[in-house]
Length: 339
Ligand code: FUB
Image 1 (spheres, protein in one colour):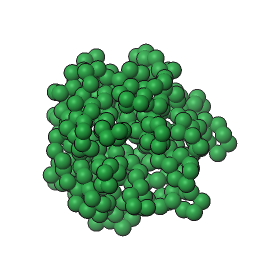
Image 2 (tube, rainbow, N blue to C red; image 1 turned 45 degrees about the vertical axis):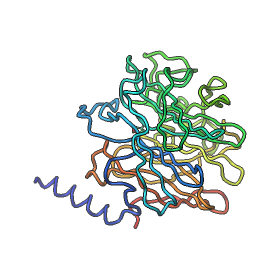
Image 3 (cartoon, rainbow, N blue to C red; image 1 turned 90 degrees about the vertical axis):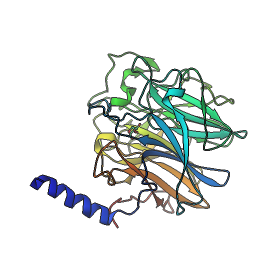
């Protein structure tokens, strides 16, 4: 081993000893957890990381996932149970590869599983699959959803309506759209231009399609101006999530190349949201992706890191830790290796 290898190994050992949480499962790699309480138990909808043998590239081609497994936990401290195969790319007529971060929702006793994948033209689309149980199996609709695109679908249940959020720049292709129209020549805004936002739309009552065209999720700075495209420590990159706390809506997301999970607060599921701060400091691995869920009166942050694989960025492991809202509604920043 070289001196560099030994230094990296020592650093990973130190981070392992200081990690505040352990992987939820170790028999497979899992990432991008979307957690919900269904039927009184926690169900986690993750990506199922594999090494597909695809070379690294700037588009995330090395994230070559092919299927999904759902995890179940009786409580955030209980053992996570792998409920088995929920959906495979071979069973989705329109999808060719790269089954990235999914989510799920329940309505009228049926379960709806939302997932992104690349189609035959290598364009990310978002599909929905339907099942009778929270853990699946799910049967995919023959076509992707109309009007949804890019990656990282996340569903927020506001009681009388469900909202679908999605989006991710760079490999997630969000920068190729303006006002819901795709053009491959579109690029990420630069400098003082407004950053691109995630997208949101209400879902139809049948949960299979959007009820309206998507709108941009705008994150404002402390002066009420949209975050700038070059504000990489605060602008939206990927991994949108929404939860409601004390009557306010919390929009949280990854800043991508600055490796932070951040949040912003607003008064409507559509936003706008005002930037508040950092939820989770950087984890081992390039990506960071999370969900926030309330279980029996306490709040939990599901997230991932790549410690178990020795830092291999596309071989990640799910973790969970408690999240605290202060009396004024602010979320306390978590250091994943502060133990
Ligand atoms: O897992 C593949 C991609 O990595 C997700 O879609 C992103 O959010 C990032 O975690």
